[in-house]
Image (cartoon, rainbow, N blue to C red; front, side, top):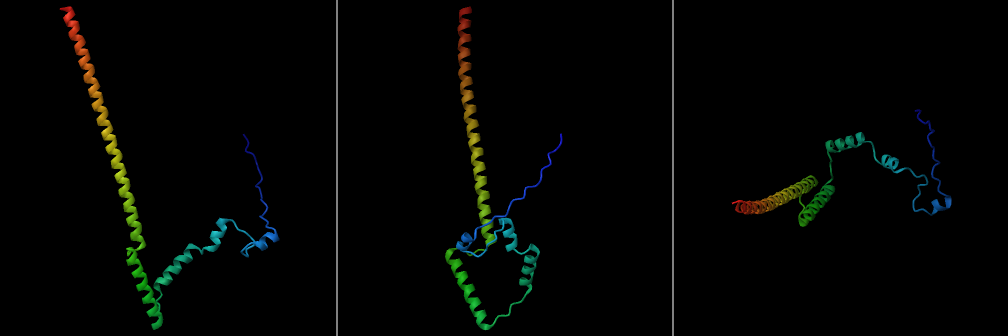
Length: 150
């Protein structure tokens, strides 16, 4: 079997009429696909990592007024966090959330196991009960047969 050779389709770019683009609330006339738009807005990963390293290694020298402002803002942020009861870091919050989820999954698993055990126990009890009933029934029949024979 031969594979069909097909030419790649080339779609025409989206054309927005000037009257419509003038009415739009933004000035961007040329639209990009979302994937390209996201890539163009975000710097490459390497440069972001370098920026983080540079920021971490750079010592900030603040003027006395800037330092006072910074301490005031920091203390306000801490007061707000304490008032909300969230005086924990983002990582700790995520950790707690994950622990809760794990506990919930474990609890659900144990509940299902318990339900299955209970179900099996009830089924066994019903089978035994039914079996004893049959045994009694057949035993009674045998007694009748023996009486007839004798």
